[in-house]
Length: 327
Image (cartoon, one colour):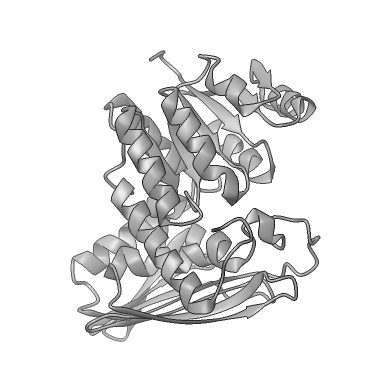
C-alpha cells in the first residue's frame, strides 16, 4: 500500500460530499477516484475534490487498480451488490449504513470479505464518536450503576421530499427505520446488547413507506424506548439511566460533542468537540485496520453489523415493513 491510502467514492451525492470533507482532514488519506452511473456527475465531483479519476460505471472503478478502499454512499438497496463487487476485486469497503437491506444481504457481504480477504466495515460513524465512546466506557465501568433505561430518538420532517426521493420511494428502501431508526437501535445494542423481546408499531405513507416507528426493546433487567420518524422533528437527546446515575448525550446525540453525567445530585457537563463533522473518526479506524491488514474492525465488527441487521429485520417484521424488490 502506498504512503497515502487511496479512497474511491461510489455514489457522489450529498452524504459523500460530507464524508470527503472530513477525509480531507486525515493526513494519510487521498480521494483518487469517483464513480457514478453518470460520468458527468462523477467528473464534477472529481474536479471539486481533486480526484484524478472519474468513471461512468462502478465496475470501471473496481477494476481500475486506482484505489485501496471505497466509500459506498448509494441508496440502501445498492449497498450489497456494490460491496460484494468491490470485495471481489480485493478492495476494502466502508459501506454506508445500513450495510444491507436485511441480514441475508449483510451475511453475503461478510462472506465476500472473508473469501477475498478484503476489509469490510459498516459506516456506523456514531460508534467512533468520542462522546459515545466515553459514555460506553462510563457505563461499562459501572459509573451509573446497573443500566436500567435508555431513551433515544431520531426524527426530522421529510414529507416535503419528492416521492421519488430515497426517503419516500419504496423502490429505494424508503422509510425511517433503515435510514435513521438504525441510530437509536444501535445505541441500545451498543450499551445493552441483544434484547429478549421487541415491541414496535409504525405509521405509513399512502405509497407504503413507513413514516414513523416507536419501539420498546425489552431486556432481562432493563428497557429501551426508541423512536424514529419522518413526520416531525424530535429533541434527539439520548438518556442513559442506571441505578446510580444518568448520562445524557447532547442533541443531536448521534453526532454528540459532549455529554452530561448526573450523579449524587450533581450535574457534570463534559465538552468533547468534534474534528470535522464526525466522519473523521471512522476514517481513522478504517486506516488503522487497513494498516494492520485486518478485514474487520474490533470496535464495529462483522458480527456487530449482522446483529444490527437482525434487529432491523425484527422491527420491520413486527411493523409489517417490506419493499417491492424483496421476495
